[in-house]
Length: 238
Image (tube, rainbow, N blue to C red):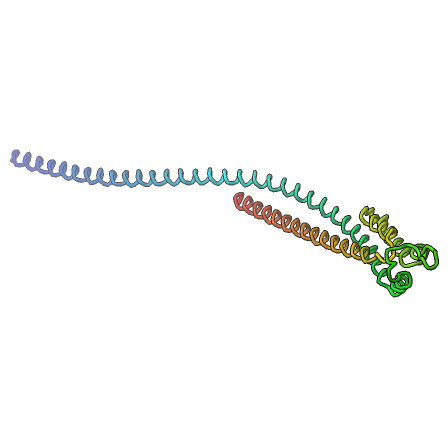
């Protein structure tokens, strides 16, 4: 009986030990699998962390570069704005002086093409004597008729001189002098000079307008760039 009892107890203990070993091995296998899963998850998280840190570093670098670019663009914008403002002020002055020149030339041209001027020229010019300043028939100098106060030539000269003084225009003063010294029958040359100067003033005005428009375009482009940089900086800060 004792032997049987001992044998039964041994078998029971052996069975219990085997069951415990099986359970332990299953437990170890489960925990090992969990460890591997956690290690894999840790590696993934570390990789994500490294990637996030790299993105943060790249974003910070982009922010710093954008900030520096913004400062440079603002400085360029301010310089360009000052230059454009100065050019605009100079354009306003030139435009005003040019208008004064055009007004004087237009007035002189109107005087030269008036009926009174045509009558004076017609009565003062005779065939074969277009270049003279005196009449051989009378022996009288006919220049005073052209230059006397109230004559078309005197009025044109006065208009040009007045505009030359107002606009500080040397070329207009030279034109006035040319009008005053022009000989009878040679006013076609004066009119040609007037038309040439009108053309010159028109071209100068067109060139100034083109330069003004170019300056406006540059101003708008720089302003747009500054707004874009501000948006990028605000986006990065957010």
